[in-house]
Length: 272
Image 1 (cartoon, rainbow, N blue to C red):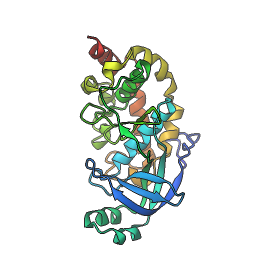
Image 2: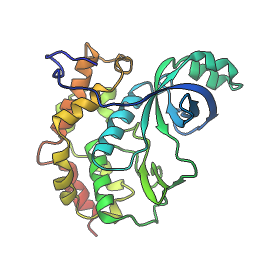
Image 3: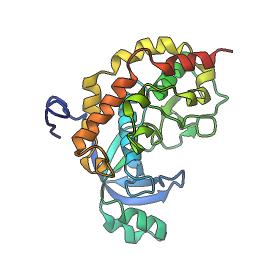
Image 4: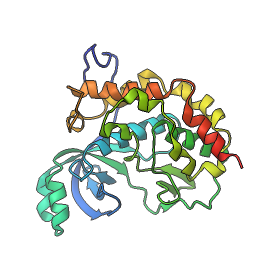
């Protein structure tokens, strides 16, 4: 996916993300407004798929891809993300009219998350290794993820490891793109509700470990993997997909500028 010098540098080669083709819609997972479904693909894999035709639109998929790949780059366990090609011809086979309509509205590329069979939702009473908890809190503060609370943990236990899922509520600046630079420097009060904050070690120490890993080159490679079609939905001030990509990079780099308010907020909240 190429870029022009006015937006992303030519060296911004997209992060490699596999593409699969949906062969069968298995079952609906009626959680939240995104209406994900369990889908079988032509590689015989099962994926939890979010559809760009769902009510919240493709920006949820953009947040999932950027946040998920950034989390993986930071060493956090995120199930593999894949681009899922969907032929709306699959829709008539579904008996549920709502699912038929969703599939018909979602031709082309959608986003899949590798299905973890037998995974269980994380229970907030289960202690987590302090440095891991701190890393996840820091990560969610960076991406403004409002959705890792006791009410909606978005964490799975699988293979004796903690897996991060469902980042569609992150990067919510992209629903307006109003004053992104100012928004990036704002406090993030919702961090005090983070489900892992009671188990976290120093967030400042996590900041020292993780912030240097989030480089402009990494962010450029991640956003270069976002399909153009997902960036054309009400882009507003962004005339092209590459300008839209640049906005995500600039927002996260501005959020990374020291001092980072969300770090002090989280450390203050975790103290008794």
